[in-house]
Length: 397
Image (tube, rainbow, N blue to C red; front, side, top):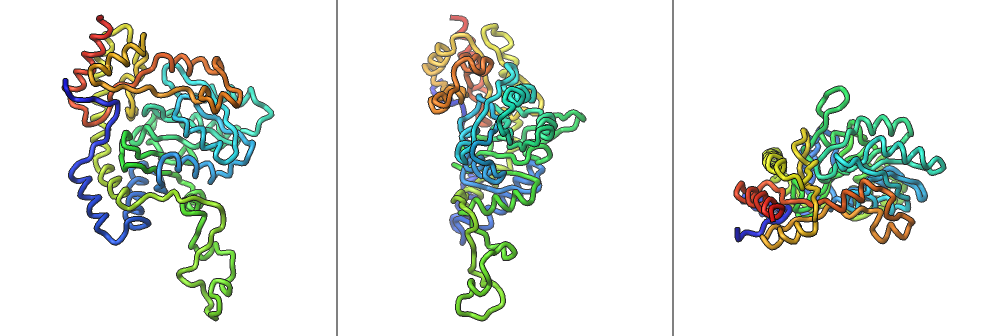
């Protein structure tokens, strides 16, 4: 094939473009009605009560940790197999990170591995957990909730890979990602390779009204316009006037927040993309089934990403022999795979804090063998077959 096949790719339709054009021609480019509409529709999609749109997934993580009042020198447990932002958000507020090893088959941090970290660190003030829905597979959040309740911990679900995904809880009920029943907060990304693309963008969902209101304030410099929360007097707000209420223009910055807002034209694109999120998810799952069937025939390839109920298939990951050789061979055929991820604890920043090779053997062995092959809704059947054939050809050489 002459076509370049990346590991991930956005799809922008004429309807998407029209929605952005209409937003650009409206009275609001930011802080307007499209943002509210996007939040409401996303909350409905996840089954949560509240949603707060922000500038990107990292901003969502940062605000989530801030809203939960993590203090300097308090600890949060995270997986080492994730994008570094999942752990970095703890550092942004002065907190400290502990890592828990992954299950070698699911690639997820587990309640058991977290429990072991808690038992092994009795003197540390552990305040929260950040389970990651890695590659689109959703952890057993009900089990994490039981553990969190036992130790008085909060949970931030990093769901950037899994909008539309779900898991089956211990009561055999389907639980949607981000529904707020088990995690205090769930965060999402709308980067172009994700399920919903807005260029950059993110979302936080929750069922906690107080957290929701604080997130709205933190998103916009720590500023509130809610009269009941004002601290300065009416007299101060009105200056020389004798009015007995606050003027409509008055606002207060009550804590240090950030400008983590999303724009209206991004939100318009998000709404348009959300309208076909389920159909695109079904395309991802169809591709995953095809890959699963094909790679069962190659003994050098392990695919724990194979067909799994509730998986959102942001990524389809193989564990292979001669990973570098396969990566380079795919590239010669214009197939651009990716590696997800270098273990966070072995990034130089975290090595300098004392983490080292051998700390998390499951994560490290996974990294030595993993490769993400193309997975996105607009991937054609011909392209899927070409990816499969190319991998088979490599192992037949």
